[in-house]
Image 1 (tube, rainbow, N blue to C red):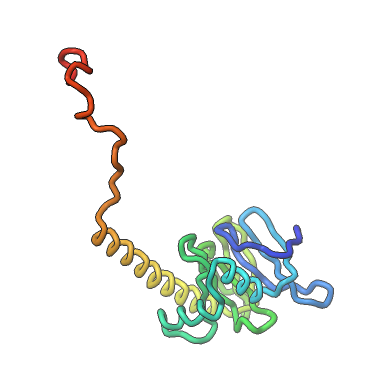
Image 2 (tube, rainbow, N blue to C red):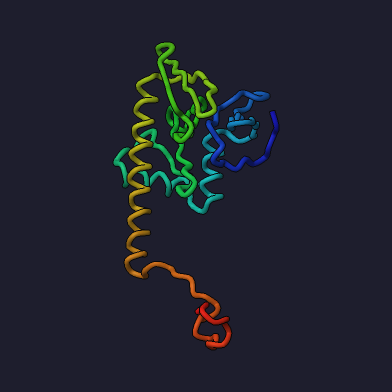
Length: 188
Protein backbone atom coordinates (compact mmCIF):
# COMPACT_ATOMS: atom_id res chain seq x y z
CA UNK A 1 0.00 0.00 0.00
CA UNK A 2 1.42 3.37 -1.04
CA UNK A 3 1.60 6.15 1.56
CA UNK A 4 0.60 9.65 0.47
CA UNK A 5 0.56 12.87 2.48
CA UNK A 6 -2.39 14.13 0.42
CA UNK A 7 -4.66 11.97 -1.67
CA UNK A 8 -6.77 13.57 -4.40
CA UNK A 9 -10.17 11.91 -4.58
CA UNK A 10 -10.97 11.04 -8.19
CA UNK A 11 -13.35 9.01 -10.34
CA UNK A 12 -11.49 5.78 -9.45
CA UNK A 13 -11.90 6.26 -5.67
CA UNK A 14 -14.31 3.60 -4.34
CA UNK A 15 -14.15 4.14 -0.58
CA UNK A 16 -12.15 5.65 2.25
CA UNK A 17 -12.04 3.81 5.54
CA UNK A 18 -10.36 4.42 8.87
CA UNK A 19 -7.43 2.23 9.90
CA UNK A 20 -5.41 2.20 13.09
CA UNK A 21 -1.81 2.95 12.23
CA UNK A 22 0.61 3.32 15.12
CA UNK A 23 -2.11 4.38 17.54
CA UNK A 24 -3.52 7.03 15.18
CA UNK A 25 -6.47 6.94 12.80
CA UNK A 26 -5.31 7.06 9.18
CA UNK A 27 -7.26 6.62 5.95
CA UNK A 28 -7.08 3.57 3.74
CA UNK A 29 -8.22 4.62 0.27
CA UNK A 30 -9.37 1.99 -2.17
CA UNK A 31 -9.35 2.72 -5.86
CA UNK A 32 -10.45 0.48 -8.71
CA UNK A 33 -6.91 -0.80 -9.26
CA UNK A 34 -4.91 0.53 -6.31
CA UNK A 35 -4.89 1.37 -2.62
CA UNK A 36 -3.29 4.14 -0.60
CA UNK A 37 -2.64 5.12 3.00
CA UNK A 38 -3.03 8.74 4.12
CA UNK A 39 -2.12 10.11 7.57
CA UNK A 40 -5.41 12.05 7.58
CA UNK A 41 -8.61 10.73 9.14
CA UNK A 42 -11.31 9.97 6.52
CA UNK A 43 -13.37 13.07 7.38
CA UNK A 44 -10.24 15.25 7.16
CA UNK A 45 -9.43 13.76 3.76
CA UNK A 46 -12.98 14.57 2.60
CA UNK A 47 -12.64 18.14 3.98
CA UNK A 48 -9.27 18.69 2.27
CA UNK A 49 -10.68 17.45 -1.04
CA UNK A 50 -13.69 19.76 -0.81
CA UNK A 51 -11.24 22.65 -0.32
CA UNK A 52 -9.02 21.35 -3.12
CA UNK A 53 -12.00 21.62 -5.48
CA UNK A 54 -12.74 25.15 -4.24
CA UNK A 55 -15.54 24.75 -1.68
CA UNK A 56 -15.41 24.19 2.07
CA UNK A 57 -16.81 21.04 3.66
CA UNK A 58 -19.18 23.21 5.73
CA UNK A 59 -20.50 24.85 2.53
CA UNK A 60 -21.02 21.44 0.94
CA UNK A 61 -22.94 20.28 4.03
CA UNK A 62 -25.09 23.40 4.01
CA UNK A 63 -25.80 23.02 0.28
CA UNK A 64 -26.73 19.36 0.71
CA UNK A 65 -29.11 20.21 3.56
CA UNK A 66 -30.77 22.92 1.46
CA UNK A 67 -31.15 20.58 -1.52
CA UNK A 68 -32.42 17.42 0.18
CA UNK A 69 -33.52 18.57 3.64
CA UNK A 70 -31.44 16.17 5.74
CA UNK A 71 -29.05 17.33 8.46
CA UNK A 72 -27.45 14.15 9.83
CA UNK A 73 -25.04 11.73 8.14
CA UNK A 74 -25.51 13.62 4.91
CA UNK A 75 -23.79 12.75 1.64
CA UNK A 76 -21.24 15.19 0.28
CA UNK A 77 -20.58 16.17 -3.30
CA UNK A 78 -16.87 16.76 -3.54
CA UNK A 79 -16.95 17.68 -7.22
CA UNK A 80 -20.17 17.37 -9.27
CA UNK A 81 -18.71 17.49 -12.79
CA UNK A 82 -16.86 14.21 -12.19
CA UNK A 83 -19.71 12.69 -10.12
CA UNK A 84 -17.69 12.59 -6.91
CA UNK A 85 -20.55 11.95 -4.47
CA UNK A 86 -19.65 10.22 -1.18
CA UNK A 87 -21.73 9.17 1.80
CA UNK A 88 -20.63 8.48 5.38
CA UNK A 89 -21.43 5.20 7.11
CA UNK A 90 -22.02 6.96 10.46
CA UNK A 91 -21.55 10.44 11.88
CA UNK A 92 -18.46 11.86 10.13
CA UNK A 93 -17.00 12.85 13.50
CA UNK A 94 -16.90 9.26 14.75
CA UNK A 95 -13.53 7.55 14.27
CA UNK A 96 -15.12 4.47 12.64
CA UNK A 97 -16.82 6.47 9.88
CA UNK A 98 -16.01 5.31 6.35
CA UNK A 99 -16.92 7.20 3.16
CA UNK A 100 -18.28 5.35 0.15
CA UNK A 101 -18.41 6.56 -3.46
CA UNK A 102 -21.99 6.34 -4.65
CA UNK A 103 -20.82 5.92 -8.26
CA UNK A 104 -18.95 2.68 -7.45
CA UNK A 105 -21.33 0.96 -5.01
CA UNK A 106 -23.21 -1.50 -7.22
CA UNK A 107 -24.78 -3.93 -4.76
CA UNK A 108 -25.09 -4.36 -1.04
CA UNK A 109 -26.46 -7.05 1.24
CA UNK A 110 -26.77 -7.79 4.93
CA UNK A 111 -24.19 -10.22 6.32
CA UNK A 112 -24.78 -9.53 10.03
CA UNK A 113 -26.75 -7.24 12.36
CA UNK A 114 -24.26 -4.37 11.90
CA UNK A 115 -22.45 -5.66 8.84
CA UNK A 116 -23.13 -4.94 5.19
CA UNK A 117 -21.24 -6.35 2.23
CA UNK A 118 -20.89 -3.81 -0.58
CA UNK A 119 -19.85 -4.93 -4.04
CA UNK A 120 -18.13 -2.26 -6.09
CA UNK A 121 -17.91 -1.55 -9.81
CA UNK A 122 -14.67 -3.55 -10.13
CA UNK A 123 -16.51 -6.57 -8.61
CA UNK A 124 -14.48 -6.40 -5.38
CA UNK A 125 -16.50 -6.61 -2.17
CA UNK A 126 -15.87 -5.25 1.29
CA UNK A 127 -17.72 -5.72 4.60
CA UNK A 128 -18.53 -2.46 6.39
CA UNK A 129 -19.47 -2.30 10.07
CA UNK A 130 -22.82 -0.65 9.42
CA UNK A 131 -26.39 -1.88 9.18
CA UNK A 132 -28.02 -2.73 5.88
CA UNK A 133 -30.72 -0.11 6.58
CA UNK A 134 -28.12 2.63 7.01
CA UNK A 135 -26.42 1.77 3.71
CA UNK A 136 -29.78 1.65 1.95
CA UNK A 137 -30.77 5.05 3.38
CA UNK A 138 -27.41 6.57 2.49
CA UNK A 139 -27.58 5.23 -1.08
CA UNK A 140 -31.06 6.77 -1.49
CA UNK A 141 -30.06 10.13 0.03
CA UNK A 142 -27.01 10.32 -2.21
CA UNK A 143 -29.07 9.46 -5.29
CA UNK A 144 -31.51 12.23 -4.34
CA UNK A 145 -28.68 14.73 -3.88
CA UNK A 146 -27.09 13.71 -7.16
CA UNK A 147 -30.38 13.93 -9.05
CA UNK A 148 -31.33 17.36 -7.69
CA UNK A 149 -27.88 18.86 -8.14
CA UNK A 150 -27.39 17.53 -11.68
CA UNK A 151 -30.89 18.73 -12.63
CA UNK A 152 -29.93 22.24 -11.52
CA UNK A 153 -26.65 22.12 -13.40
CA UNK A 154 -28.36 20.88 -16.57
CA UNK A 155 -31.12 23.48 -16.15
CA UNK A 156 -28.53 26.24 -16.01
CA UNK A 157 -26.80 24.87 -19.11
CA UNK A 158 -30.14 24.88 -20.97
CA UNK A 159 -30.84 28.47 -19.87
CA UNK A 160 -27.42 29.51 -21.06
CA UNK A 161 -28.05 27.82 -24.42
CA UNK A 162 -31.40 29.60 -24.84
CA UNK A 163 -29.96 32.96 -23.79
CA UNK A 164 -26.78 32.82 -25.83
CA UNK A 165 -27.66 30.36 -28.58
CA UNK A 166 -25.50 27.58 -29.87
CA UNK A 167 -21.81 28.26 -30.18
CA UNK A 168 -21.17 28.02 -33.90
CA UNK A 169 -17.64 28.06 -35.17
CA UNK A 170 -16.78 30.61 -37.81
CA UNK A 171 -14.77 29.45 -40.78
CA UNK A 172 -11.50 31.27 -41.28
CA UNK A 173 -12.22 31.71 -44.96
CA UNK A 174 -15.31 32.66 -46.85
CA UNK A 175 -16.26 30.85 -50.05
CA UNK A 176 -17.00 34.19 -51.73
CA UNK A 177 -13.35 35.21 -51.25
CA UNK A 178 -12.47 33.01 -54.20
CA UNK A 179 -13.07 34.26 -57.69
CA UNK A 180 -14.98 32.26 -60.24
CA UNK A 181 -11.78 31.41 -62.06
CA UNK A 182 -10.35 29.72 -58.94
CA UNK A 183 -12.20 26.52 -59.78
CA UNK A 184 -11.97 24.41 -62.90
CA UNK A 185 -15.06 24.49 -65.06
CA UNK A 186 -18.03 22.63 -63.56
CA UNK A 187 -16.72 22.64 -59.98
CA UNK A 188 -18.30 25.61 -58.25
